Image 1 (cartoon, rainbow, N blue to C red):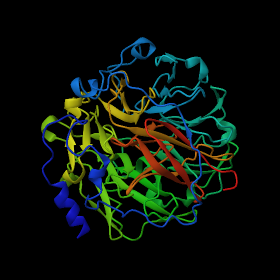
Image 2 (cartoon, rainbow, N blue to C red; image 1 turned 180 degrees about the vertical axis):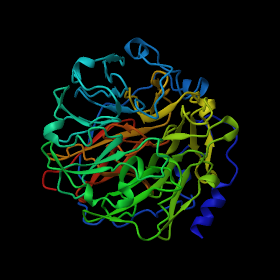
Image 3 (tube, rainbow, N blue to C red; image 1 turned 135 degrees about the vertical axis):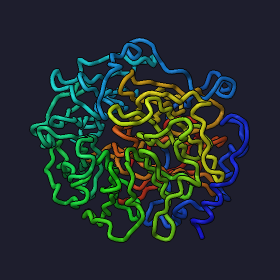
Image 4 (cartoon, rainbow, N blue to C red; image 1 turned 90 degrees about the vertical axis):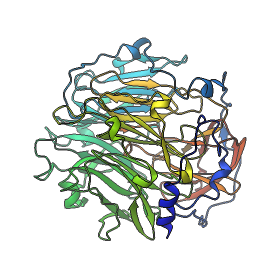
Length: 556
């Protein structure tokens, strides 16, 4: 009955007219009567200590012209200035996805997010300056081996307080670049993560799967289109971290189904809400090798034998996992060739409701091959929207011009396409997409990687509604709290987000922080962090409209 309630609600007519900042229901209170779309809100917080104060709240953001968001539009045109605007690219490039990744994080430790662009020929690093420009800084990258790069994942693997890069290559060995005061040094040999000399890696994702304090690494491998899924794919890899920047391989712990698939990414997500991060693997050629899940049973990965409904078969590309309905979630969104999936849980099983909810490509606009699946609250109404990148595959019979899309989350009414109205409908060969507050004004900007054009950056116009960016931090190992669950509490409403290091969108890695849109709220009552080792800690609230850092107590 819960699933039926969802489908009926998702089929309801979408609200008519109005900008995202003015349509009915923009206050966060509108979600309290929402029919369930997944897991009920958790009421037992275990042995969490009493709230403590203070949290570290930065100065509030300011918005010079909040009315411009409604009057002109939510997104600015693509940035074409300076070093960023002078990106070299080859409009005739013909690859499946090499060079289609994006990485955004504070890579030089100055408090501003930077951008790393993987490339087929020479990857590039752009550091953000105090005035918001993206300045080329390739001299900070290793002088050699910057080619054939598909993606890079940012994480502090040696526990020294800065973000290193795991570099995935297609047609070469993978690499680990250690961050030494904002300059990167190739330490692949000692790290032990090179993989196959001629590997076809797509992406890496980090998490502490066994709760020993050290980050572990899953490396997804895709075999290309030459086998079209008929033969077993090249093996993916699993590495356990030692906490000092080195790893040892334990790929035999992956099931045969995971090992033989054509995998674009694997994400670490607590899908069954037991406090341990499960591994969800998105596979191409799903008619032969569907998506897979390996449940984490107290540090041991176990193949799904329950018929959970998560192991869907499609030509899967991107992955978005998050709380789409405000009831703790998470829901799972998978982009694919010809169709998507939106999986919600009811009664211990998962059901696809993407058609009823309206998260699907528009065939009339040639949205055929979905790649990135990125979740973020773009309009600050309190729920997560879905951004999907579409793109042609050069040696396949797919439309050459496929516009990208934004599916705005309208609550019980389902999702509404607003990409064209917002100016986010690029018709190129999109691969990765990231929604991240790059310029530090509290609103999510959109970055997009294109195989045959420059990467694009569309900054959000700020508006009247509130948000918080939350950064959980802990001393010692896994200082950036990768894998933590963060809850924001205001009255009867709770928002739940997770800290990731890879494993979402596609070929993408964002910063170790969470963004929460909060409507018209001026403050929240409190925060709850479930740290990567399972300990729950509560914090007092804060005013909205700023960055909040939540530091773990030394005795927890």
